[in-house]
Amino acid sequence: GENVEQHPSTLSVQEGDSAVIKCTYSDSASNYFPWYKQELGKRPQLIIDIRSNVGEKKDQRIAVTLNKTAKHFSLHITETQPEDSAVYFCAATRNDYKLSFGAGTTVTVRA
Amino acid sequence: DSGVTQTPKHLITATGQRVTLRCSPRSGDLSVYWYQQSLDQGLQFLIQYYNGEERAKGNILERFSAQQFPDLHSELNLSSLELGDSALYFCASRLIQPNYDYTFGSGTRLTVV
Image (tube, rainbow over all chains, first blue to last red; front, top):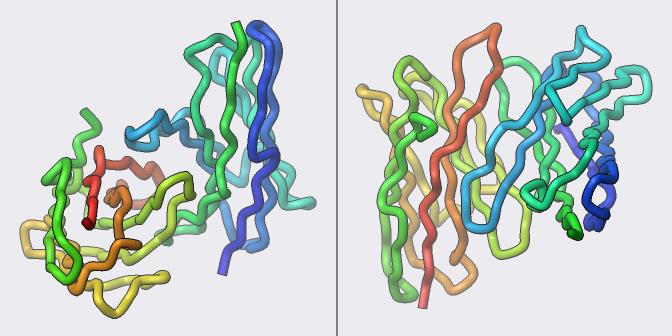
């Protein structure tokens, strides 16, 4: 089955700086890669996703890149703000299949 | 509101007991997925149902079972509860292809004492 690895496990950045989280996946058939933000005790919320026919996608301060050959994808948050502090999960899946999640990255934005 | 409804929000019960968690997917979503998230842990896939039928199983214990009813709501049954079963239980539903959008409910926090 799919195995998703996520790094780093914790990330502390100064407000205004950028944050980058990287994930690798094992199943070459995976074709959908969402990123979720989860605040303490709350549900994971989709913040951005990318499909395998696209190399990069951007939504305001958030961007995701995908390298299918290397089987890795990354989340980039620019101009970080205190409200960006949360746990971020990457995931991968194919077709009508379960999401396989990375272990999560705890992001702390220092004011 | 994500459109995925989970009840109850909180549940406290004793070891050895049995509980039922309920999930109503977004209108039109046929697939329901159950995930377990223990303290400071990631999201572990338990089971998937599609239009009333079991589609995939993850690391679900034999003490746990689930079903999806004709109205598409799903129930996760946890029996012979142990302290280690304390966790957040999320269900997610998704649109049919080609849109892969998965949306999570707010979860049920289960505490076993």
